[in-house]
Length: 191
Image (cartoon, rainbow, N blue to C red; front, side, top):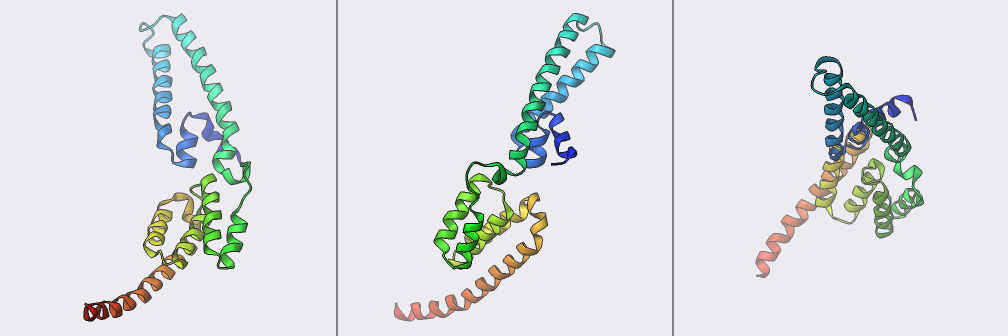
């Protein structure tokens, strides 16, 4: 990992928002900003609001809480950036890929669900799952999944593969449409 990644741990809530997109960390980031601004105002500009002893005590308590938070985030950052790498569970993506290549769709889907239980925003696993859904004729689910993948900022590096999967889905949908048109008149004559 690089130093800029660790720098996001210095602002409480920023690492979760930046790397994982967790807006549940937004209140912590805002609270930290309010606390820092309040301490700066009461220390340098409006010294009459609080006595100097209370301001110093608040600074030390805030500094201790900030240090605790930074140490905790630095320890959790590797798991936040690459959960499959640091997980105690074995990485089943290679097995899922092998099952996909053998056309064992149920096995591949089960293994991909295990991979996604560890890292729900993993673009390769999501793309492979979309392929499994496409091969098992669940085209609507595969299309919805590709749309969700497209919304992930982490999937920007996978835009070529995503475009190829979208084209495959479109071809399968177009191939399925003439079959539906052919079966509809037959169904009407049978009734």
